[in-house]
Image (cartoon, rainbow, N blue to C red):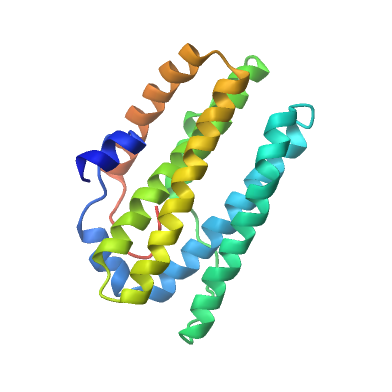
Length: 200
């Protein structure tokens, strides 16, 4: 990862360069997984709104994200269809499941909310980094532009989830927990198999 991307996203470990090469020969798989990632992002925002309806800023800020993420799902689906590729079955997301294991399950609600928001921020940050890789490493010029647009969108979402966390939780606590999340995420990236059929 270039230094500027690391500084912006805070990620401790870059994506293995082999990932883009593997993804380029598995376009149907990578687009299928991308489609489901967008779908899950939309449903995650809906779940947060349902869980915290009294948090006005959260509801107001996440409502348009639901629409945007679902729009992204439709864009990826259209790209599959344009290329005569099929939307395959949703696969188990080992990366996200590992992140969920790090979330606080008990204790006070504030801590649980913080971890939910930071999990979503981290997924968006890693997605942004992966989309940047695709935008720079694919041989298909159209797909490079396609993923550059997604990269820009994910960067904005990453900042939004951090901002929401700092709206409802003490900023010092947010920063301390975010450091723990970044370190943990780097461990996950270091042990997961490099696969070209997954966004994460």
